Length: 288
Image (cartoon, rainbow, N blue to C red; front, side, top):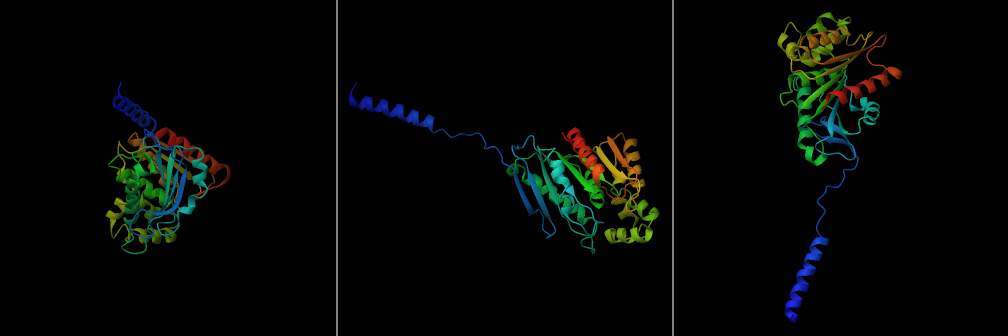
């Protein structure tokens, strides 16, 4: 073999060797746990969310929980769930959690449906970040308390044409706003809250009350619903949840309701721990 032929074979050998040694590893780097506060999801300064991304997540198996706080549609903030999120997260370590603030109802530009629009914007933001965050934004559970539960129910029942919302957890939320206005045990306190939110009474604008009531949008395709309520709630009477449960059952929708005797508009202690565990169990069973 002459020198030039030998050199050629050596060149081939070493080029193949180095090519095989330096071939890039195309397997994705495992995702690390990542939390970040106050990410903007919309145009308004109130449109902020906290994000909790678990380790080892991926776009097939890491589903989404979206928390929506209460406050009579005119107050409160996402810190309401400061204790709930760690408690639930520790038992649902394959879920990404998003916790939002939204606009408050103060004037015509921020009354209903501004809050629903904000939730829709939050969901669209989450979906737009699915690849970057390595999450499955096609499988979402909404969790809301009080006014936030009302917004969660209405979004899941009325605005879920894509089918991405798979279940909803309702902690003592209003469900029939016309009935709440007409039959609340403390009308002097309840009616101004509803008028501030909707900009009218049922007499002056019955349509807005109908359109804002989750109970009016139940059908056979409504997502599974978990309800929690205390028997002594004077802010949102338990009748609101009882009526919701009955209506869901009429349409053969999967529904489960936990009632806490003697509890009011929220609770603590063992009942709260029970709420966390039942929420985890419900999400595990229904978001798939």
